[in-house]
Image 1: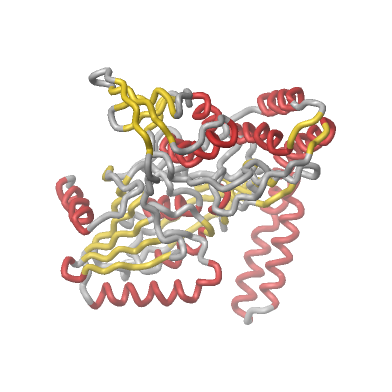
Image 2: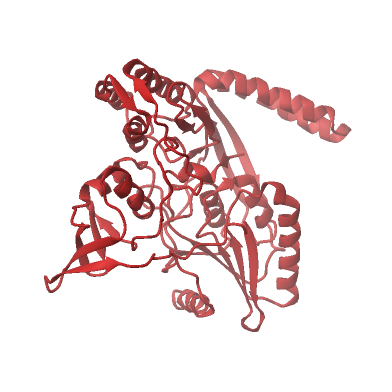
Length: 462
């Protein structure tokens, strides 16, 4: 089971930003906190050196230690530590709970395209905002984003955090006066951002919901979060009722929208696949943890199995006891290496939804939602539509929170990595899932015309 939480990828972006702490930290307190965090990374993370070497981590730790002064505001120390995030995966990071002194209007700037630390708006290069060059702001934010994020997700995070960084560290406050240079004509002009540029977002109070266009034989399942939690029973009833309607109304096209799904718990994805036609999947899997955690994990697993066995009837007890015996040898290797290997078989299902299934994904699709997209393609359910996802298919999850002892800065560390042996088809060189049909979905509320256009694009691609 892989659990990966949405909040981990909300790096700088939260509606409940805490007030910055005015405390002064001594040099020794900051060094202690730096050492504390790097010890967490080395002793807890399942695959810390997937991208960068131990030497590179050691080098960064030494540089940070040299940069702390005799005393420093907690806010500035938090800002300094954020650069560690560039070396870690998207589920392992320093948070910003000691940085922001007040909340900001997150959408008060237009959405910029970003290339080489420069901002672009339509066919214009942004020369300045409030008469100040903002390339340093863009570069600072970029350096604090995980190497694991796709370029599109990085662009989204830079845009989301630009107003925060501008006002907190660069003395750039609204109202914003933007200087633009037209790339075709070379004409330079000034433009004032007078109103907030509100981007389309889902109603995040609705973890999931369905839309039906009966006359067009189209259904849309908005799967906005894999963090179902206390709504499990409601989720199960909603799925059952919705697919019953689709069968009764002979719906031909189902769109599953995960464009705004930032993850949660991958286990909930399985409830959806029960209603879809899927191909049989038989593959090897490996479960990775830090070697220092393997012994206690193995003991907890065995304890959990024994507790479960004691509650079952005879036949189920026999099957579970067989599983425990089969895994004893594997457990010994797991304790030594931190890697547990197994086989997985998902049976074929031909009794699911009878029509065509489209999966809509975007740059804001990541974590457990990526698991859903990967299994969607692995099980050959249907057509993936949209843009490249926000993070790779193989990632570390099962995060735990920690607090640095002196500064009180919150940090998160991934605790496990779950991988299939066989790669999913249709990934780019960075392991990012590429759609079968590219389509503009980011920050858009798709209309019925969009759904029909996607159907036509699929028909033409055959």
